[in-house]
Length: 64
Image (tube, helix red, strand yellow):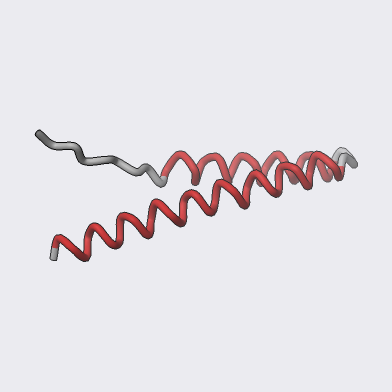
C-alpha cells in the first residue's frame, strides 16, 4: 500500500497571488486595514508554498 502524501505548491502560490492583488486593490480604495490583512494572507500563503517546494526538493534529492 502506498501512503504517499502529496504536498501541493500551486494552490498556495495562487492564493498568494490573489491576496497580493486584493491588497493592491484595497490600497487603491484607501482601505489600508484590509490591505494589511491581505498582505499578511500573501505572506502566509508564500510560506506554505516555500514549505511545499522545500519538501519537493528534499524528496527529489532522496530519489537520486
